[in-house]
Image 1 (spheres, helix red, strand yellow):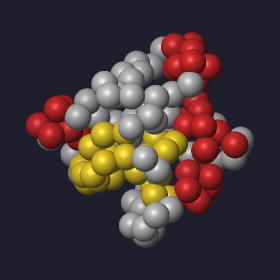
Image 2 (image 1 turned 90 degrees about the vertical axis):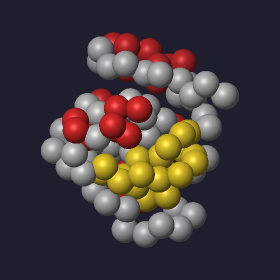
Image 3 (image 1 turned 30 degrees about the horizontal axis):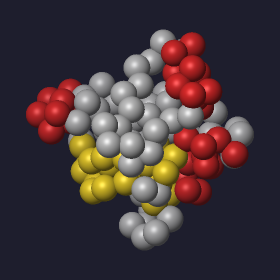
Length: 115
């Protein structure tokens, strides 16, 4: 796991958010380097996982430089994640299979409240 996430190279319609941690990057960035918080999804090796583990259906973007000291990062439950750009909310949930993968890797998954 990297200690800093890639910053999106553009802020257009190609942005996607990780369904587990809400990290925001472009589709190509997820294909190239995966998710810095959720490396067990192996998006950089299995490119089909990018479509399954990310969504373009999210609201807002926040940039967090020091998640452990940011009250907004604590409020968004991203305080333990790497510095980067994050969605304020995602509008889709992980599939049951991917939720099981999170459980197998002993990482918490909190589904969105309004799915």
